[in-house]
Length: 235
Ligand SMILES: [Mg+2]
Image 1 (cartoon, protein in one colour):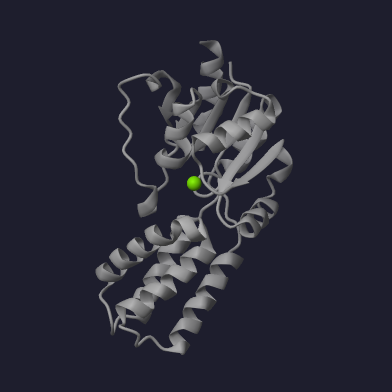
Image 2 (cartoon, rainbow, N blue to C red; image 1 turned 90 degrees about the vertical axis):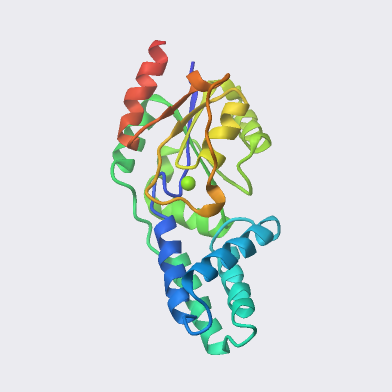
């Protein structure tokens, strides 16, 4: 029986990835004299992958990786003016108003009437706290966990803090890698609600032919979540 419903934030409750995509396109335009967009994308992805263990997730690490990539793809020709522009776009990303996904607000309200709700999100601590606060949804959650990585030990720790077994928890999110696989591994339930765009570093293959297949579902919209949870409780 499900005791806790856990929700992801970025691209599950509010839009996030498109802002990064737009910023990357602007940087590609800014550096178009030095590098073509495909090379920039490839180099940026390699830089982010390399830096992830040091910077963690979020806008600040993204901005630093953009600058590092700009220096390397331009062979050091990028100007301080161009770097200042990238820094400004990074600050704009951090100041971007929170825009909820369609159906997120009413679904969270509905779910909070019947379930213990928690929010589990990763990224810059301060930025995530700001987004949670300005989402207008904070009061609906019993607990907000801002974590460095979404792996099985992290989910086990959150479940432990809430005093529930992972098998009594369902995690809902847009990332197979971060929201689905680690929770299934722990014996919990997972709901994948795909978002229009997925960050390269979040790509993961989901092949479910063994244990866990009956604890996983993909929904087209977060609006379908209350119905699925009702169905789960009837099983
Ligand atoms: Mg997400």
